[in-house]
Length: 352
Image (cartoon, rainbow, N blue to C red; front, side, top):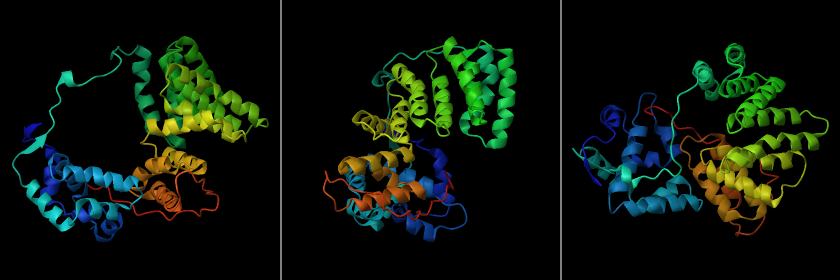
């Protein structure tokens, strides 16, 4: 660790000129929602400053761990912050003084301190992959019905030029799936897999299409059993890919079968691998609550409940945490009668 004078300079303008946000508002989304102005404020800049200060101040550093533990224990953000940090007005004065320093500390990570695990290799895109890359980027960013129809038409044109390029066919499979063309998506994915069995996206797109078809199938058991096969093939290639684990669980659930112990373990592992997927954290938390694994459920749910952007996932996580607040670990809790949660206010994204 050494002093640095160039830490997050892009936040400096917000800290100096945007409408100020008190540290108390960072820890209380409801209060922030009440007090925020319609103009541009320093929420994100102040959040950066707050975290940076806690990481580098020796007296405050242990309080960050205490705050995070409070959240995991089920406290709301406001209570967790007050218990961990003490007088928030004192903390606010410290942050203001910290923001006026001419130099700040930063971590310097040298190359020899970093490990990458498997060797990293680069390769040049094929001509077909380069041609379809702009469409693939648009597909993976997310599309509506109209854009999906436009992209699939363009993807077919590129695929006609490069019919033996696995990368092109994988992107075509995704475009066909987005456009609602399941049979075409499966056909493109199958051809891509035949050309390059190690490429992962074709298995995903084929699995997606088969799962969507299975929802309308007369024999759902057979359809879901078939739909999960591409994901199982993907799991053999990449053990830590979360999607095969999720769909292994879903295949049993949607066939009307009580998920096996292996399937439940798979969903729990997927939630560990993809903490950014709040819906997955909610589903895993609910499953664990039903199994009586309340302490593990709280660990999955607490970060979602603490999401300052609020929304439906945060409201559901808070509701689930409240439902098990007075329950001992090991007690199975029936969640079937829980009402729909009231959504928490979302923090504005100004300054993000």
